[in-house]
Image 1 (spheres, helix red, strand yellow):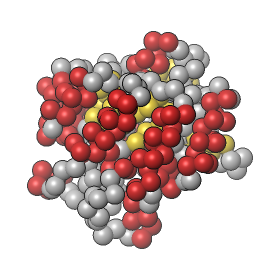
Image 2 (tube, one colour):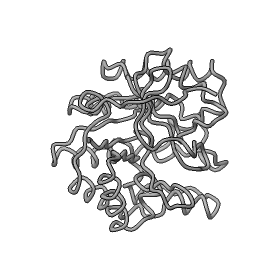
Image 3 (cartoon, helix red, strand yellow):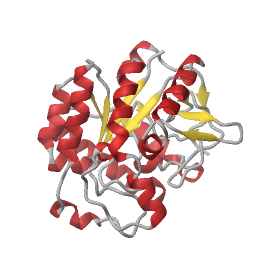
Length: 282
């Protein structure tokens, strides 16, 4: 069964739900580090001849079309991360649809590829906004990777399956990897979770998950490997969550690339299409 490596292409200032994060109107005036950091990840992937999925923020595609073209030119799948990095449960269905279309237009303009996959900023699909799955299907998306089968601050669908599955509207859902700690599921294979946890523990949990026949779904942001990024004055818990383990994250990514076999979501769908159905709406 394939494992999927994915990158959410956004910059160091694309933080969620923080009053200290720069507002949209300021983004274009800030130092951009996304190209350098993305190319670090591209180099690690190229060294091992791994092709994976890059979920591109539409705003990034407009600002750095040459980077998106470079990613696509290296043989990686280009998918959508929305346009303005907005939590979906703060949007109406109409606003979400507009954001999707704007992102797709920017991505097509940058690299000529219309995205077939989507990941919500912050994995922000909850019980209250399951309508997002229907909007995605109506807009021509084939799969989604926004389901977080555990509690979290920006989303979470605890109690849902940890396996890739076909929703009742035909959309394929790829949940983020979690580990069952008996009392609850906990994410470990991406973002701040990956940065926080010891490498040995991450590798052990990943091996156990693979042995159980559950594919690994890894996600990483370019900023997760950037120890030199500007640091915002966040509240203590937010500061810790945002910057913990940044200096050691690339080493963990390298170890995971060496230990396991990885591919993209589109390749997964070609070689191991999911079975079964789960409800896509409330």
